[in-house]
Amino acid sequence: MGSIGGLLAPSAFATSFFKLPAPGLQLFTFFGKIDNDVKGTMEQIKAAGYVNIESAFSRLGGLYGMKPKEWATMLTDMGMKWRSHHVIGAPFKMPAGAKPPTDANGNPIKIPTMQNLKDNRQELVDMAAEGGVEYLVCANIPISTVDEIKEAVGILNSTNELAKKAGLKFVYHNHDAEFKTVDGVIPYDVFLKDTGIKMELDLAWAVKGGKDPVAMFNQNPGRYPLWHVKDLDATHTNIMPVGKGTINFKPIFDAASKSGLEYYFVEHDMPKDALASIKESMETLKKLM
Image (cartoon, rainbow, N blue to C red):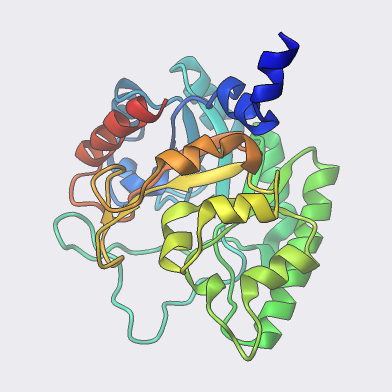
């Protein structure tokens, strides 16, 4: 036994015995649709095989028109678990020249006024704690100047302290902009160095930003308890269901134990058919699991 064990590196054992969490879904995938029939949509998501849920923004206000405990109870009664919730870091502003979001039929989606961590961090922490969710996630925050990056660091660290006191885990979710140089600094590197928080790594946005997720896990082991899983076409322009694009997910999932993974959430931003997309993604996840 000793000689056999010596042939196997510790990393091999870690990969072999690490059990991947149940499939999760970020509900932004159904943005513009879920509010029309919240429970019916969640029933479709459960039927597609998703267990862990990460909530986002809703035109109905609150948690898809519900109070935190009401939302959490509904999911539990349906056999799902509310694991994580997205909030924004500062007041939302449509980028210059950007087109307003539209639904699958091309109709504009009106985005309601949302609370944010800059102005409402205590209220958002209290809301998440009330519902018993495990993770509070900063979905995005302004980082277009060095001053904005410095302000973001302060907001993230302050929110992290409030979250700890409330029994929550607080993490930051990236897009590709965090990996672009801003006045000589890379925002993501600053966040890793100057905040004490862990990260929700959006795998596709990281790849689009020129990063290798496995290398990131090796550089900062245990710092990535949450993932967003989506795919990209060859141009890295269009989001695809998992397995329908060009990202090789096997080595990423093989490195899950190194990342410190607790939950991963499939996400497809503004798909034409959200239900069809998550079903396609599930077929790939079954192979990876």
